Amino acid sequence: MRDQVSAGDMAAFERLFELLGLPRDALDRLVRQLLASGRAGSHVLMPQRVSQLTWLGLTPVQLARLDTFITWLPSRTAVNLNTAAAEVLHASVPGLRLADAQRAVQQRNGQHWQTLEEAGKALGDSGKLLTSNAHQLASNYFEVIGRVRLDSTTLVERSVIQRDDNQ
Image (cartoon, rainbow, N blue to C red; front, side, top):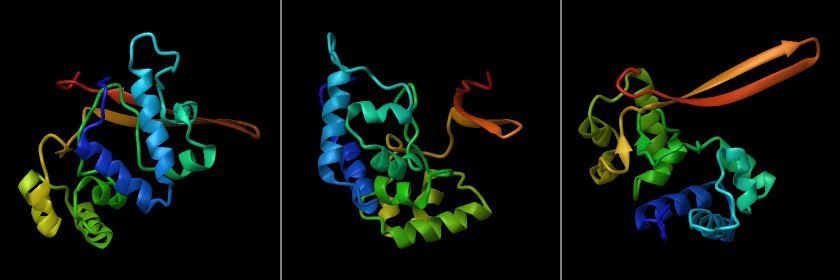
């Protein structure tokens, strides 16, 4: 982990927290704790899944609000424009209005975008700000949800799997 968060990443999370009605101080505390967890000799443990972000200061209510829009992955990845929720598109593309993101998601649901240029056109003027560093059209990570029920007890397990070169 680096000693600072990129300005673009921080701005995207600021927009997401604002949209979700989460306090700015919760984001600031989360970032400070994440940075601390990446330092050698730190007493702060690095989370391995989204639910563990409460270790870094998010309340259970804040985490529940945020959980739908984030995934904890073992490495930094760009936002997958073909699967991201409208709220995530709004947060990750500077200047993109939520209504435009919602319209683009409805269009995308008919057929996924094949190129960043195609996605950019669907996002309107703000789509010109798409970058290959922050945005992509596919992913090497996939979420698998398993559910087992025995009588009145149900167990749900969410796992993230990684695929590299069809392996």
